[in-house]
Structure formats: structure tokens, C-alpha cells
View 1 (cartoon, rainbow, N blue to C red):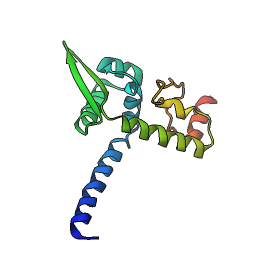
View 2: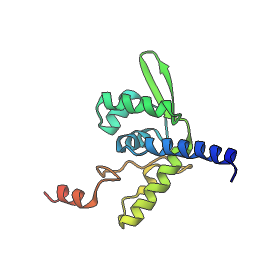
View 3: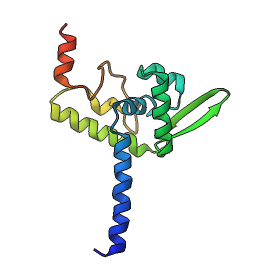
Amino acid sequence: MNTDSSTNMQHVFEGAARYFSVLSEPARLKILHSICSEERSVNSIIAITGLAQANVSRHLGLMYQVGMLSRRRQGNQVFYKVADQMFVDLCRIVSTHIDRRLGQDTGSADYFGTPDSPPVALNATDLFANPSREKETTSV
């Protein structure tokens, strides 16, 4: 491999690492799920995710900055939508894989929807929650 090719691949690896680092935060996955099928206002995202306004705003800003989301302002409200469908597809693939590895039937394949259908709203507290911890909280 020549030096130019190696340097180009280094840029690709760094870009991929940035993408994965954005997806490494559960709150961002909740936000992504809330808008993966339609544009939503910040207030709507807060209501759906149950996250604090400051957290949602911070995460939305980062997700927008890396090109995951696009936004538009209407009056005093800001609306966000997924700008790069690849993020939703990647989350769907990983979620389905984790679901199968854990041997659970959480419906994760539908968590982020499919290209032809919107996501299913799950009652589970968090798709990536520790299954043994989830059992502890539900058996009380």
C-alpha cells in the first residue's frame, strides 16, 4: 500500500470513528428513533424521549454538526429530521443483531422502522438496557 492510499484510508477510518462515536450514546439513539420516520420539533423530541431539554438540545446540535440531521426554523420552533438515512439503516442492523445475540424478542428489527414502514413505538425502557437489570425492575 503506498503512502497516498494509506493516508486516504486513515481519513476514512477517522470519519468512520466519528460516525460511530455519535451513535455510541443511548440518548442519541433515542433521539434518532424519535425522528427516523418524520421531522419533529425539539419539544416533540423531548416529549417522546423523556430526556431533559438541555440534553436534547446538546445532542441535537452534535448530531446536526456531523451531518446526521438537518434542521429548519419555523417561527420560534426548530424542527429536525434525519439527513442521512444511512444512520437509521445502521442502527436497525445493529439493533437487530444485538436483539438476536441476547436471545430476546424485543422487536428491535422494527425499532428504527424499515425503508417502507415507520418505526414501532416500543414499551421497553431502552432497547440497549441490560436484560438482567430490566428483569429486576419489572419484578418489583
